[in-house]
Image 1 (tube, rainbow, N blue to C red):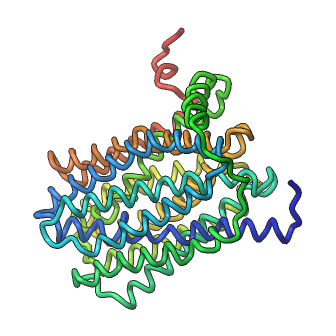
Image 2 (cartoon, rainbow, N blue to C red):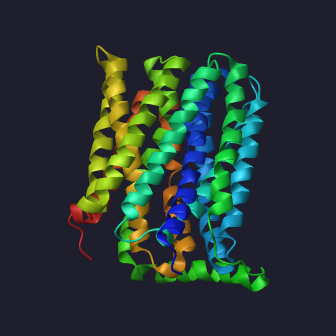
Length: 417
């Protein structure tokens, strides 16, 4: 259906606001503040806390991997995409607010709330991402996606600044208040998306719709070989996204445990990383359509490998915190472009009639093995150290880069069919 430019821009802005609304959850809860708070305060010690937090992220990944394709296919059949988006947003906000209640030693309760809120967050992203193709064209998809990611990082940055002013992150009670703040932020700034983003008409849900959802998933698995470009990309992303998920989940934990960052320094680190993440998203969003999505993804992966190696060697240097800051800035500048371009590339290569389902598989491959990164990080930390655990992230980035450029393991060892 043709929309005027003004109406289309309104739709794009409404859709983009969801990134602005949800980014503080990732930034403050998963990556920087609550993760470090859990390890330092709620858990009995750093090693046990890192292990438990890593396991929570792994459990989230496994559940989302199974849930996202099914609900994506169901939304394709019934048109309930926006309803799912609203439901998972409210569920995430509720359980984020409930993180106010766990006290020192309440590890099981805190982990349960984190898992439920994180699953809801990820599922909301599945349905949000599926709108991208219909809101953009081949000529502006990079700019639309990149600007949304940039707006998201501005949301995370704004929430960090407000938290820095209003809350004392060295006070456990005020850290818990940040969780309530994030929950309110998520609901408040999601309202433009809920109100103004248009969706297809919903049909009455029947048993046939449910069975058709399963059939559609089976059919897609069966026919997936017909979409070789999609398959190649999803397998590559499966690995490099594992690395990103591990960084998101355990970056703040690593800064505290291996480099002795204070909670204030972690908060400042989050602010700086979000500044560069926003800049990277806006800059590469503008250039992506000119230089090509694949080129930006390749560049981002190379820089992510270099920056993670810098973070790994930082504790051995004479200026460990300074080296880590450099690594963090490089990493932050590439996180946005990598995620934005991955979303753009997926939108460019998927069939029009399977938007939600294929973005369900996009989430599936983003989560199918994503429990491995945090799980390995937790296990290696328990056996050796956080520093050695960070090497697993480098390995995931390298494998993802190799596969994205179609250099398979079998080809490398000379295997022939």
